[in-house]
Image (cartoon, rainbow, N blue to C red):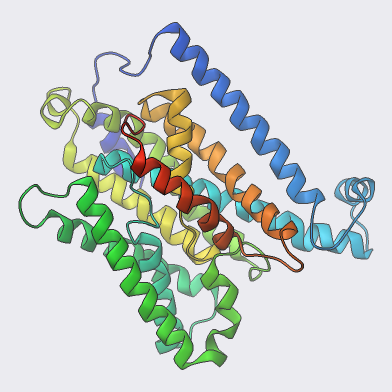
Length: 354
C-alpha cells in the first residue's frame, strides 16, 4: 500500500490549491468541521449513556473511569463501548466509501448500497457460510472483500456497455438491479438452511450490536488502510474534477487514481459489511450534507464525511434502541431515513455540486 501511496503522491502535481476557495467558503468549512466534531462527540457520548438496559448516568461515568465487577460495568464495557467503537469504524468506512464512489463516477446518487457493493459483499459472505460453513469474522472478512470488488467491477462494466457509457442514471439502475438479485439469492440461501443462518439473522439486517468478539480488531487494519488511502486520493480526485485531459496535463494519473479508488472502496465496504452487515444510505446522505459546507473540494468532503458519517450511524443506532421495546437494527433505521432522502435528492433540480 505504501508503494501505491507513493505512486499516487508522485503522480499528482496540481499547480495551485484548487479547492482553497474564498474567505466565506473557508469560514463555512471550519463551521462544518466544528459542527461535525461536536455532533460526533455528543452522539458518541449518548451511545455510551443510553441503552436497552437502564444504567444511571452517574453510574456509567463511575464504571467508565473505574471498571469493577458489577453488572453495570459489564454492560458498559462489554456491550456499549465495543458497540460505539464499531459504529465509529463502520460509519466512517461507509461514509467515505460513498464519497469516493460519488467522486469517481461523477454520480451524486452513488452509494455503496445503491450500487450493490454492500449486497455483493453480503452475498459472498452468505455463500461462504452456506458452502464452506465459515462462522468466524476473520474468515468471512475475505469473502466480503472479494464480493465488494467483484460487484464494483461488474456494475461498472454492465453500465458502461452501449452508447453514453456509465452515466449516473445507468450506474444507479444497474446497481439497484444487481443488489436486488444478490439480496434475493442471499435470502433464498438463508431460508434453505435456517439453522445455519439463524446466528446471522441480525447481521443480514445490518447491526453493530452483539457482534462476535474480535470483530473490531479484525476489521480495524482494513478500514484504517482504506481511510488513509482515501486521504491520499483527495487531490487526484480534485484534479480529475477539472476534466481528464486537464488532470493529465497537471500530472495526475487517471488509471492509478481509479485503481486507488477501487482498492479503497473495496477495503472500506468489504470490512464494514463483514463487521456490521449491509448498511445502505450512509454513503449517500452524508457526502451531500457535508458538501453544503465544503463545496466540491474532496479534501474537505472526505474529512468531514469521516466525522459526520459515524455520527449519523450512531444516531440511527440510538433511535433503534428507543423506537420500540427491544431493538431495531441500525440497517433498518438508516433505510427508513435514507429512502425519503433519496427521493428528495432525485426530485431536486440541482444536486450538490461534485
